[in-house]
Length: 45
Image (tube, rainbow, N blue to C red; front, top):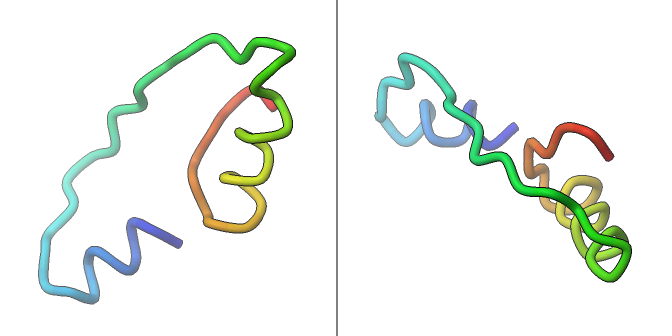
């Protein structure tokens, strides 16, 4: 969803390079919300 939005704005996306971080117990809920409600591409949740 976010990649498509950037492309609709006129920016050509050639590749997506993930920024990998370890999800700690204290951040699981926060990261899941970012993924589910804001379309962030977070792997491993």
